[in-house]
Length: 152
Image (cartoon, rainbow, N blue to C red; front, side, top):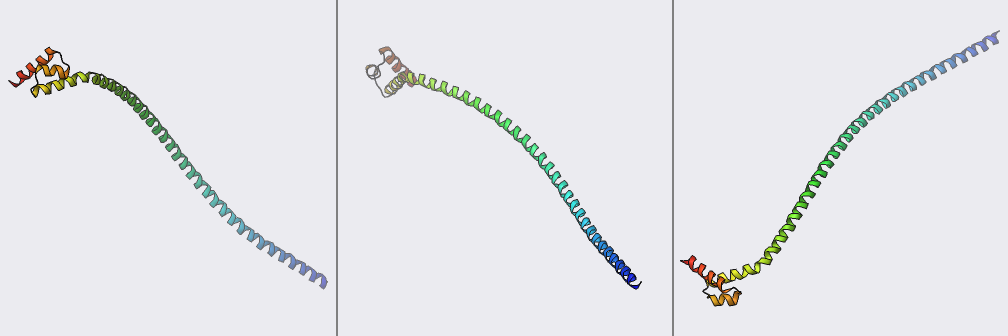
């Protein structure tokens, strides 16, 4: 019976050793499990923070898109107003050019009368005005008479 008792004690010691080994392995696994739970919680926290940041950026992006659309609308309206003003100014410019052309066509006569007035001031007589300025005799006499009337 001594051998049986030794085998029993050895078996009991082996079972006890295995129990202690399993206990420490279980303790080690619990520590790992706790560490993993903490890590999962920190990842969840980070994920929640990233979701909040994403929502804020989405809100900012939406606000900027709305602002951009308003800006584009405003500039489109300004562009249309400027196009209208340019069209009006081009029409006025065309009218001004036409008026200038009409005036330029009338200017040769005006130049003749201006030259005739200068000649009268310098003392030209009727015959000289008729010859140099191609004026009718009566108009030359009227210019001289008006000049004399101004000076008196």
